[in-house]
Length: 174
Image (cartoon, rainbow, N blue to C red; front, side):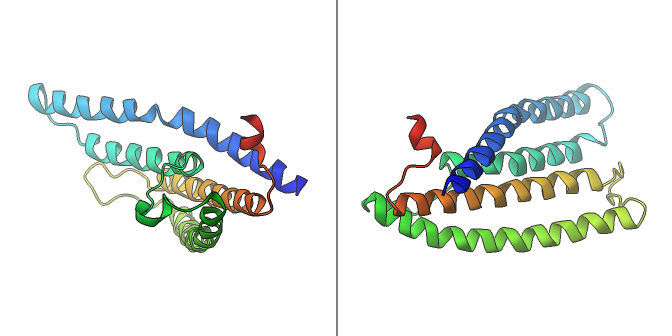
């Protein structure tokens, strides 16, 4: 179980640092959209702004997702969950996180395959007028999915520790 605690500390710490850094990406997105509005109003419209805003949103969402899972900010059906004991919540969370791990495993597999496709054919490009390469955003997506998978495993280990009556590192800090 000490190995599980070290894993939790490492993954949670890494995702906390990345999540706190990436949360400021909202300002990058706002800047891109502000420039889009200004350029459309006063100059010629920029071709790159809409697609770049989409890329920034994908990076924001995918790299911030693991931190969101860690903080418990994901959506839950609180109709029953809120009334359950901590032990019952841990039991249900341990089961449902297995579905998340399975889903993320398939998503990672497909993401890696798609990213390799982009590299294999000399750089897949977007079919828009701006025509940016797609491999950079695909690498960011695969990285985000991988970090979410690591965080989901961390959450499973936390649930197992709770079910065994032990504290995991975050509870030890409080």
